[in-house]
Length: 259
Image 1 (spheres, helix red, strand yellow):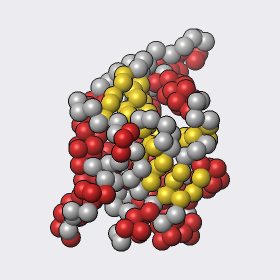
Image 2 (cartoon, one colour; image 1 turned 45 degrees about the vertical axis):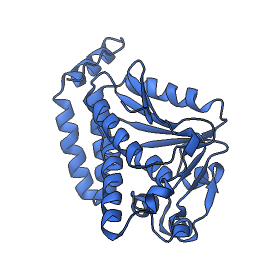
Image 3 (tube, one colour; image 1 turned 90 degrees about the vertical axis):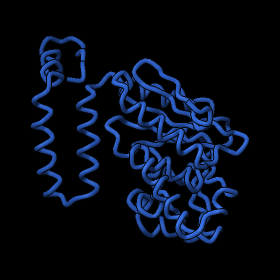
Image 4 (cartoon, one colour; image 1 turned 135 degrees about the vertical axis):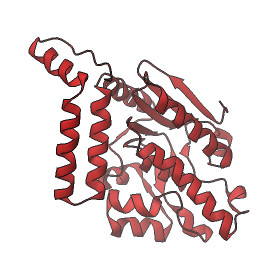
């Protein structure tokens, strides 16, 4: 696998690192292609039940797009460039495995969009978030105009998208953009502990929970409740459901098999 993206398997989860610290982990076509391959590989690996995404070094999670490469785009290639990034980030968001962003510094432009595609986000105290694309004469292209309003509301999202400024980790926390803020030295350990915990859960139930919550974001309450009941019934037909309830009744730890 290309070393601009590193994958480190752990016991039941994996750490995926964007590895261009000399460029503040900026996204270019090479990184996106490697990220897409990594996500596809992790999705197919039944031993991996949760994924942590972070950036190499202590300055940046992902500081945005590679501006030199971005400068070469025209109307046609720009649309293809945006669609490519959207495809990769959609694969993360729609994964049946929880993705957790460990935001260890700047998360700007495509970096903020990558973090938002993850199911949960935890940040260091020095992290900064923003969608500065307007300062380059463009708009966010990897989902920023769509995910940010859903996460923090349209008025504040527009303030960030139109103004092109940055917010601190503390403000991101107050807006609900991140789950929690931790000191730099503690972030990865905290996130790995969460990943370890999620890796012990029934994988089909994890997938079902992610699916049901995703439906909630895209439909009305009544449609969502109908989908929830259907998903609930489907999971009741799994071996993991029988194992989980039997283990509870027998007062022992469940051993989930993903069936």
